[in-house]
Image (tube, rainbow over the protein chains, first blue to last red):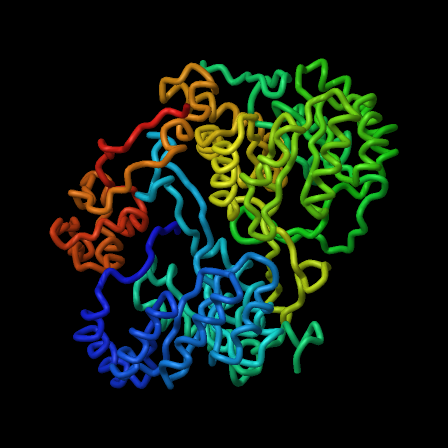
Length: 237
Length: 382
């Protein structure tokens, strides 16, 4: 899938006044953690972070697209100094070793999430010689199955460098893809594109598939496959 | 029947679907098969001078639908074999067929100075220089040395392996080369065999590789467009062309030729001719007289951007006859704008629609569509 989505189209006020409460109530009912995602500048995070924390969320993910080390550290510190709940830095890939960037902000965060959609990329409507998307040049950011090898590499690079947990994101379609992220060092995975395309019931199917795979391969617990690829290469025990 | 022939960097190609550098062009035998299969040009596999790069097996693994991961760079065949055995067998038949033969080459300035003229003597009508495997400054030096060493056209193949700005790189090289090839494999990426306890698929350090084929196509289309916007010289596309529509897409965003690699490995050497038949049919069906009529069409219209329309005034429309009433559009709509119980035609509430396009994407039969946009800004290139 290609997208030109940036952030939620709801305002922070709408989230704070209504949406978080609904989401939190459902999460509490089902016994699952509820995380908020916020951005973007250090000032934004200082302002919005405490409000989101006060709304009762269990953790906050913040997305950083820039790769400049000073700005990266400044952003992570700004949120760290503003809230007490765990914070997760969502990193953008594809320039050098992502582990190096992660290590720079490790003192300020509780975990990492890799990766965002990759871009810019382009597909066009050849019958009309027109863009498929409404962005200026028709550019969009690529997500789904094609970016999984890039995401796996990114998770691997971060996981081998840092001690804190890594959340894997990028192109999960099958239960085996989930296992691959865990083997590359992930402690959790996120899914987006596959849910958009297949509907909300797919989480249950995917989780069942992961459980079946573990059973079929003689594992009792998903933690047994976590980091297996790193261990294989002698990188982490 | 639309004309497929074209002239690029002073060479005449019977069609724009050419054999790109890869294992499907790693010997005289397979190059001759590509020639017989209808390739409009032949880029022999990259010869690394003075010696092939070491390679450990496995060096290639399938990925997804029509994709590969690989870690081998260039031919394992020494340059002397190419000069004495492979080129002499291909050059004659290629020339007789009017199909240009291009030598893939990679090496430092000193080495290309020595070997490039010999490749030309052996029958190469152009040199495609791979910039990927070396530091950028060394690649620029090698390209300059190449320019001084041979009179034939030089194509520079660009790589996207560390977030490089390909337009900037092409601009750096433009004074010394005749064309750009976008792009070499994308990466580095990692994939391993989950069922074998995480055994690496490739023998490279950490199991890293580059990706080719269908998964990289949207990346390659953007790379071609980006470079074509930045330079005056022709751009040759490479990256996951599997259908005539993919070829047309590359041509429309600015490519002058399209290299086929992964599709030739997956589907065999007859793929070139099949793509050309499809391409001819597509051009005929759309009323184009030849390849040049579609070349750069998107580039000229959108190379300077379109007006960004944030509020479409209309939600997607339904082609009722194409709808199979599967209900997917209703399931994927996050704005409660589509009511689509299975076995019923969907009902779209325009006022609730965010025009995100997800239902259009998810529809398995293309029954949903946005109206053709009437208000795009058309700015011809200066």
